Image 1 (cartoon, rainbow, N blue to C red):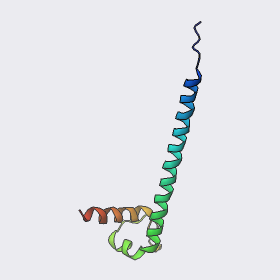
Image 2 (image 1 turned 90 degrees about the horizontal axis):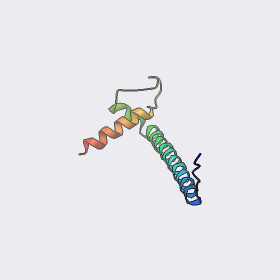
Image 3 (image 1 turned 135 degrees about the vertical axis):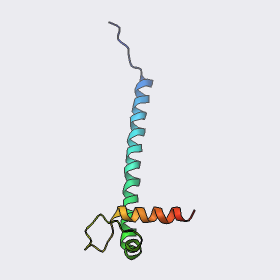
Image 4 (image 1 turned 45 degrees about the horizontal axis):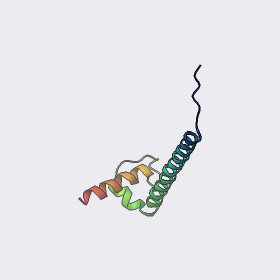
Length: 83
């Protein structure tokens, strides 16, 4: 019976909320892609150093390039070892 009317300010609030949420999701995905790309570049550039420090591999042994997960673990170990 009672119909609550939406005002222009409420619509503006939800519109800006959706816009901010959309930008947050896009930013998260962008930084995730950048981080994965950096790990891939490190994997290609420092393949020998990475392979010698970590015995864990997610790709086949015949691959000379370590996976992103392996590079991430080596970088974390080196970073925390400095503290």
